[in-house]
Image (cartoon, helix red, strand yellow):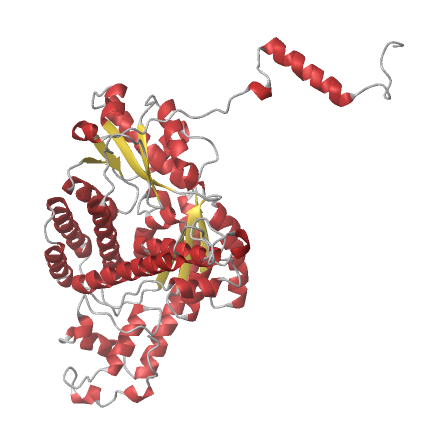
Length: 552
């Protein structure tokens, strides 16, 4: 005991350092100063010479977008295969081979790829080497706080553990760059034809999805909308694959959709679905088949489009460019952004926004999607800014907050449902916290946040049904008010819609005034001259003078 150092003599940090060095020497570990940074070996080589014997796998969006994307690539000369929709079996594969703590879309999409390749190996007889050599997967990537930025690493980790080490995952970034090998001509040629094909596929997928959710809740004969949409998918896919006229395809789709018989006097609360991009877009097990469930429960779904997401990305670029141009103390250029023509960049982004909107509305008019307006990104940003800083990024950023407020102020929906993966940082951790303030400011708001985890569907459905009950009451009150203001009865409105009036046509859209489509129809019926459709006794009881101007 006499030989032990006293507290005054003991240098704890020095002793710990000596102990660490002794243990490193004993275990054969190198010093930290000599350690090299670990870099994951990545095989993303897909060159033009490999094109003829390489198949591209893709998927994960809506049925329409996946179908049109594959058709577009086939039309450009690529070999493409359909992996099928991510389902609960995909989730099992994702959880088995993926890291713990990932978000739901990661498990579903990563698992879907692993499931598909496993089927090729175990049931189709291909070896792992043949699969690695002759298949590639094309997906989207991103940066920022969202875990989408780590998806590619998750794909490679899961593929390696599942026995497909070296499988090529090509990432098409949201900024438009393809992260892959350079030197030889790239196997996936990112040129004007490719971008034009993606452009067409996205627009047409959005348009047909919008028509689906607009028509299916009101179809008189169950299944006619799905049957017509299936034929439309075939028509558009064939046009994209054969590089034939899309205008003719759109015209034929319009005829298919116009043949659907609808009854818009049915009272259906309109439910706006917002939230994390993949969770609100997918139509399968990844969000409990939410869109179908809502329709089965008597609701009309107001879905978000991929075109709107692209407009949001363009808005971000404009906003950031304008903000950085003012940082003159941090940049030598007169207007900031040294080496960049700020005015030219802003003009280019403005023109891109107008191009997307113009093309969308032009095709929408051709296919019969009337009265559909893409969101005003500036208005959403200004509406949300007091509550959610526009500089914050990840997921939909400020858009979730802005959409909820505008849904109430503009009477756009009877209920807003925000769906996202369990633990989604931008949506669950930030937006949902702010939404509690928004619902206090606007008590009439019916807002429901839902987190998906791949299980617990019964609990999710129960929560939706409780809020949907309120939304149905809300829609019913709108219809009662519309009948009172027009002086019509519902039987009279049905008579108008079935006696040759244009308001009964499947492609017709009444001017916007209420959230519920049936209420809009009633107001529309009150505006029109009805003597040609109704007996004199009924026509004489109408009081259109009580109508207030449309909220448009």
